[in-house]
Image 1 (tube, rainbow, N blue to C red):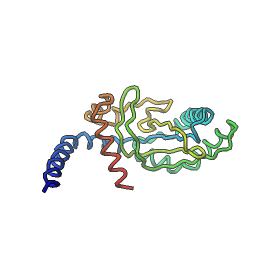
Image 2: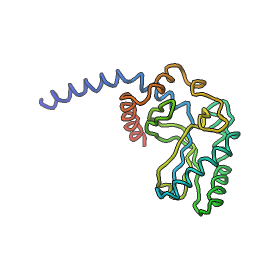
Image 3: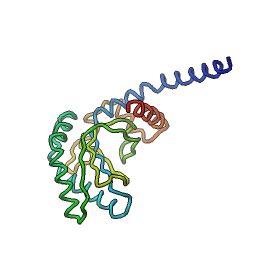
Image 4: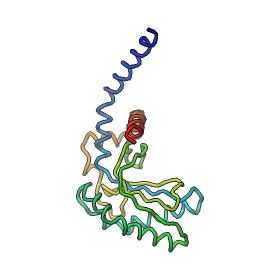
Length: 195
């Protein structure tokens, strides 16, 4: 009987909280389904490996700005998948020319990202399409940005507002707020359950 008295109020609170945040969670998931992220993992956290990661980031963005020219997310994912080997060759060329013998691996897939605050907007936590570049062991700190819409590409002429609804833009333009923590908790639980 005691368990029932404790469980029922907790269940009611959880249900009310989720119903209140469901529209925000739905908007967040809509955003994650419209974005292609670039994710680069350094070999380690040594200063040299972190600098190499940042150098690779610049080299990659400079040499792929014309490649990701699709008008839709699906087109750009397909471009990434068709060019995975060429992207690995590009990355390995930079690594070798920088004096390292690490191999890189390029993976085009979906992966979980925590909430990320950029200068002009905040992307909520969630599972996003990504181009993941793993340098060597891939056990160092990572770097990420958005390939589509081309927010991080050097020839960027697009804006997130060209692809997101007004409601989605409102969510990402608020800066980091407590609702992002709720989204993050929900998405982490969901991501773990789907593994």
